[in-house]
Structures are given as C-alpha cells and as structure tokens.
Length: 249
Image: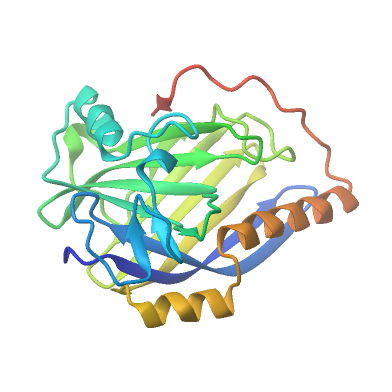
C-alpha cells in the first residue's frame, strides 16, 4: 500500500433474518491508512481537526481512551503475531464528530492479510473487539470463514447469542467484508464493500456534499432503522453490562 491514505467510497448493507425481517443499503465513506504515515491531502489530518481526520484516541482500547496502533500491536503480539504492517480501515471524523459501528485493524505480511481486529461499537458508548485469524496465521482468502462467539451487545433488537462468521476479501483495488450473525434462524448479514482509491481533497469535498456530516449521518440512519424495527414489533433487549475483556476470538 502507498503511504498516502486511501478512500473507500463504498456501500454497506444489512439484512435481518427471522420472523421480523428488515433490509437496507447505504453509501458510506471509509479511509484506509497506515498509522505510521501521517501524510495526506490538505483537508485530511491525523490527530488534528480538519474537514476529515483520524485520531488515535478514537481507536484501540476503551472508547475515548484509544491508543491507536500501539494497542493493535499489543493485541496481535499477545496472540503470537508481529505483522510486517498494520493498517486501519475506519470512518473518519468529519469536523469534530465520529462514530464507527465497526472499524478494522488489518495485519499484513507482504500483501497477504493474516489477521484482523474487528473493533465494534454500539450506540450506548460501549466497545468490544473480535480477533479474526486462521490457524498459525495462515493468509486469509476471500473464501475463508472465520467464526467468533457473539458476546457483545450491538443492537437492542438482537440477542447476545449465536456466533459471527467473518469473511474478508482485501485485494489491491477493492475491499469487501461480510459479517453474518447466525442464531438459530435469526440474526443478520452485514456487508461493507468498495473500491480503493487515493484520498484527495476532491474526494473529501464530494463525500461531504453527497453524504453530509459523515458519521453523524450514520448514527441518524441507525436510529431510523431502529424505529422501523420497533414499528414492526421487534422485541427490545435491554443493554446488559459489557464484557470485561476488550478482545475475544
């Protein structure tokens, strides 16, 4: 990957399965950055306010107390991996506001993806991360399915039960991620996909015009879908105490 940040002008889909169904598709903007390389276009900054920015404190560790790449390095090291490169795939701040339903720390050996930390946030201010890997950190292919037990409360309309199934397809020109929540016929399938392109001032301005307020728009759409589920009669699950452990696999 080039040291210059990349822009993923992509789309996300959610398809709820079971007795009460719901589905939606929205366009979304992510950036893919090398945390060791702070360079970027004039309208993008690292650890400094700008039209778009990525702050270390927003990622890695507890919400608001993130340690950035150092945290990801520690998680990978404790699992027995010291990767050649770590990249962060996340929605950037637009001005001062940030919210990432899920962001991803990608561990690479050369151009091979060998592990991923899926950093999941809910609207209650909680965070939990899932370490995704194959045995002996074998390269992850698009066809590989990586399972993890669901232990974190994400949506008040989904139970903390069942398991996640992750698929990662990271190529030189495109990223496609699929997360399926499987729970005895219930659950949902979420996807994120889009082409990779160098981040530019033009792209940032275009994204702001097409999808105003970035992450603030994301959380507004989350509440809109929650209202739709409530009106459809989906049972509401009270927020439980989050798991003490920061990372599971």
